[in-house]
Image 1 (cartoon, rainbow, N blue to C red):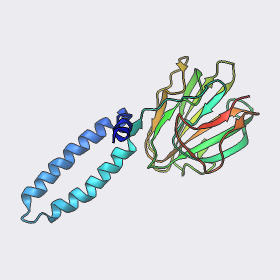
Image 2 (cartoon, rainbow, N blue to C red; image 1 turned 180 degrees about the vertical axis):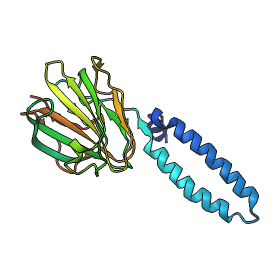
Image 3 (spheres, rainbow, N blue to C red; image 1 turned 60 degrees about the horizontal axis):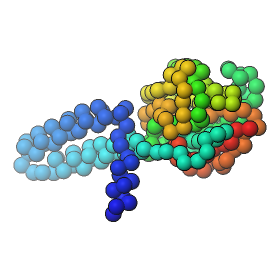
Image 4 (spheres, one colour; image 1 turned 30 degrees about the horizontal axis):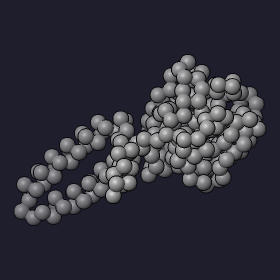
Length: 229
């Protein structure tokens, strides 16, 4: 029992969902009261509370925000920036910023995953750019370039550049990025938040060693996905 309480204390509601959860709860309660008082039978009230209550609990689950700390050595370590599943591990040509080949590791986040994003490496944010775009399914290859996305370039303490790309999916309609240009950033800090299903790509220097496999589940700020050279 003590362990369970301890774990619950490490979970909070993300600030991106606080207002939505509170306002929607007030509306649900108001409608439920009207239904309870307007009908002689409780059936409309029960149906409404059952369906809408379940949807509200799903939204509550979506906005959960676990408090996590990486316990390992952060030097040359790349941790998962998001909860989800590995969908890409490949060398690719990155022609927008690097103009060379990079190791790309991508994590797909389903609507059931935690949607907070963490910085994958320690370093300094060199720039943050946001691009409007389409809303293809996030696991499709073209989503990385054609979908709405935000690019965050980080320079590690030893001078290596790591690009993190937050990508909106078919359901996602809002990308929030907390990273600020020229600010120091660290593993354990939140990089941003993406609402509903989405994806995060990490572009690493060629020669970096992947530490994950395809379809492997990841835990944001906990799973080591690669080691820098």
